[in-house]
Amino acid sequence: MKLIACTEGHSSKIEAFSLEMIAAARSIAQAGDEVVAFFAGRDAEGASASFGAADRLIVARATKLDVIPAETYAVLLRDVVTAESPGLVLVPYSANGLDVAADIAARTGWPLISYVNEIKRHGESLTIVAQMYGGKVLADCEVQLPAILMINPGAFAEAAPGPIAAASVQTIDAEPTLASGKVRMVAIDVPDYADVDLTTAERIVCVGRGIGDEASIDLARNLATMLGAEIAGSRPVVDNGWLPKLRQVGKSGQKVKPKLYLALGVSGAPEHLEGMSQADLIIAVNTDPKAPIFNVAHYGATCDLFDLVANLSDRLRAGSGR
Amino acid sequence: MNILVVLRMIPDSAGELQLAEDGRSIDREWLDFQLNDFDDHALEEAILLKEAGGAKVTAVAVGEGTNRVLQMAAARGADEVVALQAEEDAMISSREIAASIAAMARAKSADLVLCGVQSSEDVFGQLAPYVGALLDWPHVSGTNRIVANGAVLRVTQERGAGVAVTYELATPAVLGVQTASKAPRYVSGSKLREASKTPIGRAAPESSGFERSAEIITLRLPVQGGSGENLGGDAETVADRLVSILAAKGLARN
Image (cartoon, rainbow over all chains, first blue to last red; front, side):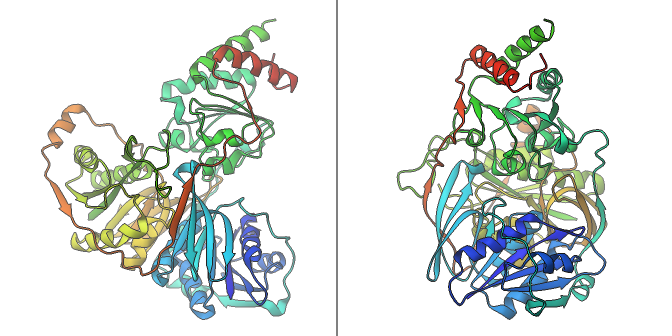
């Protein structure tokens, strides 16, 4: 059986989760199976230099664009799936993967399971552990091969990076597919971190949906100032326009690793945890004792966050006046 | 332009979730159902597009409490509202409803289908790419800005780390909205009352058309806790403890 591990890279940087996809495929490959890495993008050299843990690499090489639209990625992958007849296709849960996985599933008719944390193989079927309801529920699923899985970043340890033998690399020209694509890339905006760079912040106070309203952000901001911390928000807070996008932590925001991460009213959806679970010290305050944030917190409290902010602010103010 | 926007009612996962006795679903009896956040943004984007360039917006809702959410959609500016019938007490699987949405897109001569990029129940795949692939229309997920210039859409997609990529594509298309260009608006009680007169259409579901699908065998709650220390629920005690923890690590300013 062939297992296709979908990989990604932009701006001459291979995404680390690409190596996780290869590792996931490798973890259930049996004797005689072949792990085939699929890469679409400009950095064909980077892919060849990194994906040695795969048995074979198929590169759809672009020459101009830094970002391949998912629509084009899916067309290229479809051709590979048709040619290779794999038993399993592993797609990362990424901006690209969100468009690619179900597209392939719809066009092949193959079953798809998303948000996958664990895979076990039993011959022609798999048992899967997937996350639902913002990480509050785990689903044990069963699926017959061939199938498609969309894998959570961080669920599998990266395969060791290393070069793949030139003889095991097959290169396709992606340009004709890009040229006929229905989705054309027109611009990439990389944020200007002149004012705020959460990725280098030593201390962060992050507010989540539990903060309730925009006016209450100021309370958290004052606390952050007292702690010498940057204020940050989870996705619902930023989507509501209460904090600017540059201050968002998580999958579609920044990945941070501060010395102190104080989470106020943050439930800890998997997409948020992906951005902050590596912080040195995580303190979480949430009235819901089952909030997933407590699974990564070093200290947790279930008191009302406004009472806590008031009490903590009083003590810090008193302390600084000493 | 005809816009079809999909509104899914899902369990409020900010609240406590309990498992049903069969172990394969969540106990829905005491659950609050609310509009999927991302779908709320999709609705807002649809209304913003209508305000910017004119459009007919049809909202289709599925799940528990569709009448309520469709009245809200009408109050916010949807021109036509339709409830898609679904199996009662079942989770809303994008894989299952995609064929119904695609059929409705054709029936309504939609130029654009908008839905939220994800829902917490889409473990078997996401709606926008399913519908896009079934219709063979281009699809882009994770949008935070959509501008229509005639039949050409300019769409900005979030790629993580604050990086945004802008694409151009022609209608017909399917877009999975992450964030609307502006935060979803509030509607006044009087507008809601006015909109409560809007007739709600009914649509029967189509068969998914997929012969094989994955299956949930059991649901379970994750093992709680990790190794963190619980500081309890009394704000004063917690504040005292936090001050000493921070001070011990040199992280309090005092």
